[in-house]
Amino acid sequence: MIPRYSRPEMVAVWAPEAKFRIWFEIEAHAMDAQARLGVVPKAAAEAVWERGKFEVDRIEAIEAEVKHDVIAFLTNLAEHVGEEARFIHQGMTSSDVLDTCFAVQLARAADLLMADIEGLLAALKKRAFEHRDTLCIGRSHGIHAEPTTFGLKLAGFYAEFERQLKRLKAARDEVATCAISGSVGTFAHIDPEVEAHVAERLGLKVEPVSSQVIPRDRHAVFFATLGIIASSVERLALEIRHLQRTEVREVEEVFSAGQKGSSSMPHKRNPVLSENLTGLARIVRGYVIPAMENVALWHERDISHSSVERIIGPDATVTLDFALARLTGLIENLVVYPQAMQANLDQLGGLINSQRVLLALTQAGLSREEAYDLVQKHAMSVWQDGGQLLDRLKADAAVTAVLPADALEALFDLAYHTKHVGTIFARVFGQS
Image (cartoon, rainbow, N blue to C red; front, side, top):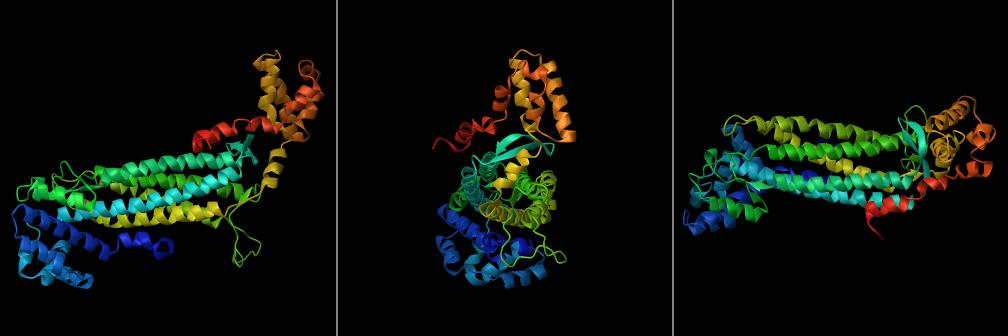
């Protein structure tokens, strides 16, 4: 991923130095297990740990000649280890190193992403409680529906990202497996105990059947999970974009001192962060299909998945890491305008109370059809000509015959719509 959308800690997971270090640890731990089994001399295993080194530039130079990255790495490693290097990689194949390394990198990336989501959850929780009772209009189809609170909006996103955290934990567990099974995965030239030892040292599980490569359905689940998380990022970003529109202006991304919104229009304050998040979410989701297409490989293995994973592994995790961090900062610094929210609640002359009036009329004895027609008639008049729904209802003898003026007025108390906010918050955040 380009530096503009990258953070150093996640980039480091995919750096050549980190990758070759994992390769080294796989080979060295395998040597320890081989020595314990009596397959290689103990002194050879010790020599790998004591003298084993590698240089990225040297590996790349060797690879340019041999056209094989694992052989290039082993050649460079042998240059440091010396004569005992002939015991390295005994009974192993390249996929044992590559797939196990990829599992380690994906697990480490997942750990960073889980920390990102936990940070976002903390920000959402704080702002949700801050605006637990801040009234705003709820919208369906983009049209005013009934009152809600801004805190409830944020509580909904909190619950969603809490689900995403659980999904990511499960996806990490799914993908964190080790394969040290040799050519076509039969363990013909290496004892399964070696695989178990390496897995334990690297914090992985043993892959039950690796067929020379770890089955790619595991990776498909992982990248699909990243795509789903990205969709939640976009959903929250889209909400902010809509609420920042000039005609709405209920919230706004923080606009820092010296920031410029447009090269041509000095007045502009654009939702650039949430628009950026929408674009980044598209990138992450774009990697889901290639991961799924990697599942179907020829027989025990082919290399068609390799080029895909060298791109989507770093890019998807680096991009999502950046997006989650940006979203967290956006929420932490989001400017909220309660007065604008109240103005929007008042915009339609009380039409947002139409359902409550409808229900009250049915409770008072009218059929639902009669009540609906009465309320809709006055609602459409207010919609087209302005005025207040309450005034029109009070002036209609068919309405006041069953609901007196004071009863009608009580139906327009917006607090009615927030009476169960505490119950919902307790469901989401637990009792406090």
